[in-house]
Length: 354
Ligand code: KG4
Ligand code: ZN
Image (cartoon, rainbow, N blue to C red; front, side, top):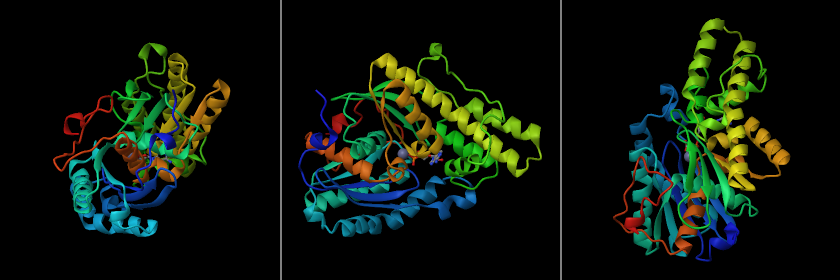
């Protein structure tokens, strides 16, 4: 039986979510009935911009500086005190370990102090919960395409139990490829949105770039390191590039990167007999990917769920929603819950700690 996410969440009251796995410190309050009551995201662009990418130690130091104020801002926005909450959820992995430890430790301390149940959330469960939170028609089972700075994977999301991994990248994540191509094109950090903006004025067919592992014999795995190398070579061959040339390269890269995602998702949905697809993670904010996925959905009769942009990139509403679901199922974690920088999503990593 398929159960809408809103029902599955149960009625334990508002849940505070905390997300700090990378360079965003975020806190949010989500209520099963009322939805998102507050969502605060504090970025660190000015901290990492001079280095052209995220510096892990600087990220965790900045989280330590902001965590308390960000959590308070979310509670204030929701007009709630900790005692009004039904539970606390914090990302426990995967991500940068130092960054994770700040949000998780703060969440554990707050839950302990207020006598609230606490649960650690897998970051990918959070991204998928963003789609369920924003689209009640997205009932399980469904196909989940997770595309972010650290992940590119297709999962079968089942009613109960761990997700089934269908395929994943063998090297770079697609978001990582966007970020690396941004650097090659001399665009500022963060790279993905910058490439996407530049691509708007370019011709996606101007430069022929490889679409790796797109054929059925490669299963559902992805590869992005060859595409990044091909863009590097194309830049070298065409130097010096004018603005139009850079825009054409950005558009051609974006087309190659997203075409493979659409093609594999269509095939996986058909092979798996799944009628609903969720596209989640930071790269799900990409306008071309959203447009092409929707088109594919119309062609194939698929229900394609795309979270609103603010719920695609890292945020805490998705962590609160995923945590609320776990808490409603009776999952509780103790003060000994620890964080993991790498942790697979297709088995329950924290089972022994619950
Ligand atoms: O989910 P997310 O916020 O953090 C991770 O869990 O990694 O995803 C961040 C990634 C970055 O690689 C960023 O460049 C990419 O998502 N991204 C985009 C866009 N917005 C963010 N990539 C392409 N187009 C976008 N509009
Ligand atoms: Zn993420």
